[in-house]
Image (cartoon, rainbow, N blue to C red; front, side, top):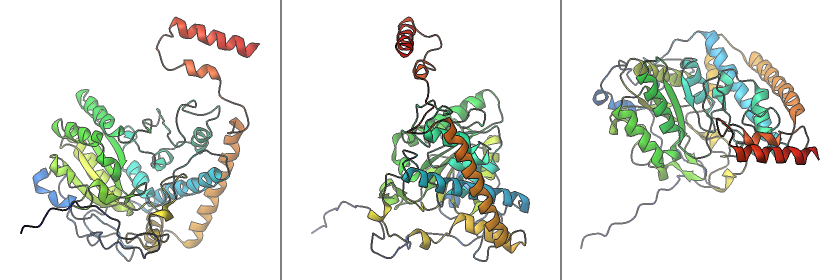
Amino acid sequence: MPRRSRLHIPHAHSRPGEAPDFSYLETSPAGAVARPDVNARVRDIGNLSIELVRVLDDDHRAVGPWHPHLDPSDLQVGLRHMLLTRVYDDRMQRSQRQGKVSFYMRSLGEEAVSVAQAMALRPGDMLFPSYRNQGLFITRGKPLVDMMCQLLSNTRDMCKGRQLPVMYHWTAGRIFSISGNLTTQFPQAVGWAMAAAIKGEDDIAATWIGEGSSAEADFHHAMLFASVYQAPVILNIVNNQWAISTFQGFAGGEQRSFAARGPGYGMAGVRVDGNDFLAVYAVTQWAAERARTGAGPTLIEHVTYRGAAHSTSDDPSRYRPKDDYEKWPLGDPVERLKNHLISLGEWSEERHAALVQELEEHVLESWKEAVQYGTLTDGPRLSRDLMFEDVFKEMPAHLRKQREQLRAEQGG
């Protein structure tokens, strides 16, 4: 008799109390993946969506055709930005645990994705981030005080009290507002890129989502429009293996790589070691040039690992081994870049420790300044008048009346 079909349920390879198991992870040796011309046809570069672009080998050397040959000074800048992101994250996490911030999301283990990509892109390129891309703001120079004030929702809050913590925006820095609704930034980035192309501009768009968000309908809408209109956009999937408590297999990662969805839609797809600063930089540079020269969009899958909880509302020990990040085969992005610089003779453990101390002091001083503009418990506070602003170009009569009533009550 024929065997009955059975429903397949994806499962994590290791659970709490078990040894971490990453046997499912398929990698390529550092330097083994060829670097095609930026104008190569999608049908000829399908291997990029299956193999894994890597530059740093196990001896901390940069090897292979994707080596971007950055100056040591640029690598030191990248290391500084990643370290500052990590120190900032640690401080804000502690502040949340102390009741000074209501909510926070760290990017531990994913710092290279934001920092390397921000450095590889041009200042005029428009960025559409997710909620774990604080490194984009830090790399582009957003003062930490401004970011902290958003977390505190105080009188200097860039969002005027209208957004959840960590959902920053920065008009001057060309970084779009983060949305609490998953994946909305994907079609927004594609639409912006299409408009830039219509206007004949040279700037491109870049956007980020987690692998779990690729199961949302907005992902597919964005992919279709980007492919059909060859929009100058870089679409990033940060595959950190977990969508809150759900293993990446539930978003489709078991059958094919997430990058393989690119060729499926007729666009380039690249799978890159997301913990390799040099590889992320090189792939982003390649995709940006491809977009600027009219060769179309690129879908990049960053293979990385979420080293911390999904947010301060999450307890990862309930669904994965406690020491899993320590056993992640692709290592830690900060340590790998640090060791590469040391191997070049351009860094040392002593300089590294001194930099960490310097950045910790900078974060502490920024926090002391930020709380002067108000905290969750103490004033000064945002004006209630702000609720009437930024909605209508010209305020309707009924809102003007309500505002005057509010002011009269405040005055009384």
